[in-house]
Length: 381
Image (cartoon, rainbow, N blue to C red; front, side, top):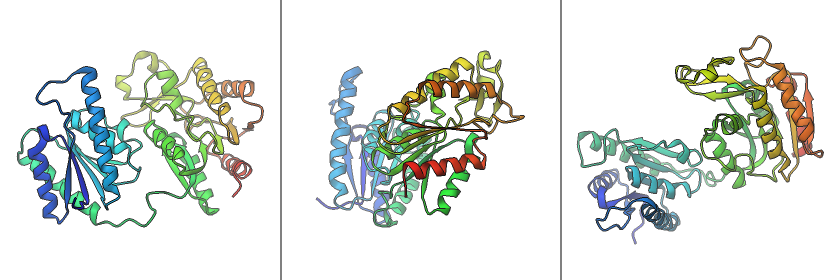
């Protein structure tokens, strides 16, 4: 079988014309492609329910087998083309590939793609129109996709760039950005590389995958904010191993961003949230202060996850504030809420886990130094 730099995943039952056009565009850029059919094999029948889901799972497995085999023959990009069903099948195969391997999905975006691409570095190209016959708009989108893909093919990555050297994983939000920036800078001055993950769920899912594949030598979970959405708001991206992955890694935890729930636009929030202290983090997000009983819930969840670790672990509690607006004069300042967290930690934390209490804000230099000192104790260089 001829070698191809691009593997094109498409449901040829319904997208053959569009896939053929995209293949020709790639050829015009001097890029060879091979098409892998994602069709469900229904032979014209309409599948539904569990029968369709099983067919989709089988199609994804076949595609992954073909893609994995082709990766050994100098394939450089996996390119998917699909609507609801085909796009989902392509994503399933893509998510099983190495995290940083180039993956492009051309899709009508009939689903929220953030869950699927949060840990897989997939480049999304919205089609703007349905993939239902070629037209001027779709041709232009596919032409642009071919040019983009050709560029990925011509770019030679450094040897080993797909497997990062183990670094220190750090979690962050805008509400803890100053603390994280200070820590990253301090580590860099010591010659230690860090990798920062956004604690909005999607970044947390990526953190878990990096931890599981050996890309981290230690974790500083400075912003375990997702706990508030999981246990209080009851709404979050699926990430069952966010707080269990890498259980044997040296781990330092701080309650960054644990004092508020990150919700949507203020005008869309229920009154029960607007009755509390809150502020607009941006035009899209509103931060709402936790109640004391809610803090008990997330504190218990965090301590439970720490107690379940098998590697060296530590908890640092900055009693001067857990986020940028939890400070003197801040919009959701609440020392009593911090005390609720600390009391539960003292009561429930496993006795061999180091507990450090600071009379400083999470963004203060004292907090950064405490993390560095603790890291040296748990994971000596």
